Length: 250
Image 1 (cartoon, one colour):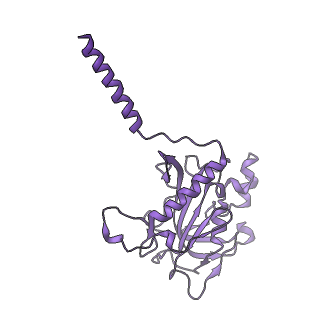
Image 2 (image 1 turned 60 degrees about the vertical axis):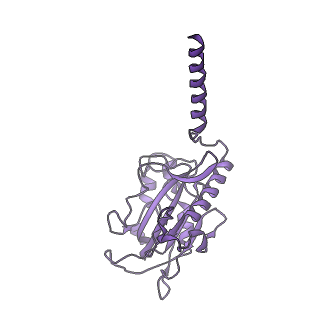
Image 3 (image 1 turned 180 degrees about the vertical axis):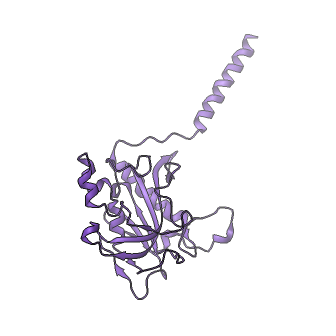
């Protein structure tokens, strides 16, 4: 009887050990910011290889079971340009203003159709990838959400009054609100002019912002109720209109 009990105990321990080996490891944020930056870059590259743009410019993931997307070009084949900051932008061919639209200034009032998501680049069991880091998107997207363009988002330009009314030193700084990597990437696009809110969209492209070009590990405005530190952002958008910001709007 003792031997049977020992055999059962040994088998149970073996099973538990094997099960533990098979369980995915819980991701732990690296202390070294250089490691975080490496994860971001590797995960963004995987994202470029795993996704494509549909006929309206929406980012779609390749299916492993549906063959209808087999002939689509992955984002990595759509001439992505990487800037020194790590920001990557893709200008979608055939979806830009004709004649060429207006240049987009860093203080312009923008109206855009946009899908904006944020991810945490994780290394899980040796696989580095962008994974959704909360149940909430960065914003309720205007494409298959509300259906209307967003106007003058604070993460592109925060008004001076917001800064002067702030009660803490950190909240008096632009970087507390603005995503610099998105501002940087948008310089390489032209905006449409005076498109109506109800006009059909045809997304112009993609901007991918690694965490170091977003909020990094610094404090930030509470946009979502979740931490946006160490988060990589993906913007899929069309600029419906740009206007020079008046003194009253600054």
